[in-house]
Length: 240
Image (cartoon, rainbow, N blue to C red; front, top):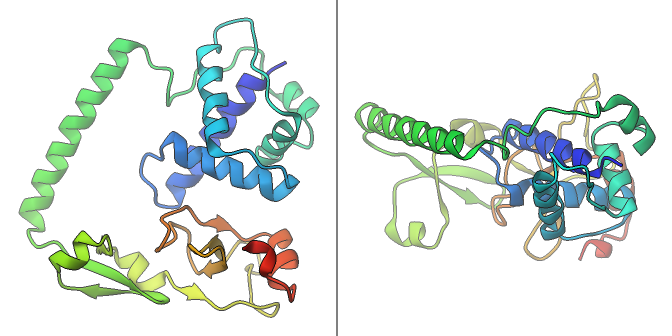
């Protein structure tokens, strides 16, 4: 059994994917949410993100032990699919018995302290340089289906509606009205639409990856499954 290796590799892939979506140093919670949503989508089996975090924490503790952890069979199948394995048996064949330790959680105590100190110094340096080179912070706000640049307003900031200016999001991040005729993939097969749910549970689609502007949850790549089941279907009430 190698369930502990499976969950660690899945969390590491989730870390990379979330970074590619613009999320810096994704937390275990964010990674667990991504995996929970993925397994639910491909298998209709749902476990909360807390369970995935518990799986991961147990795997980290037992990585150098003989004992393995036990993961639900539906979750095992979903994680294998997420890692592009056709089956758990294929995962076992292609995964060495001794894998490298996770670069995210398995540092020794003195390595952790050194890493934290280096990170603090880097952050301090970054903010000093940012202050002297960009003394005036720019802001933007979400307006129905796009971002707009605005001046700083203490009331809006306190309400959590202001975001730090991001040129790429300002120019390229839009909410889409989609139907069966929408072009979801490029000619090469690359995803062109990302989706998430509103606070009310409605499906919403966007032109770029990132966080949902209202809920803050990570958007997911559109799939043929989602298109067939929710977008090309006349009944969207299942999402609520």
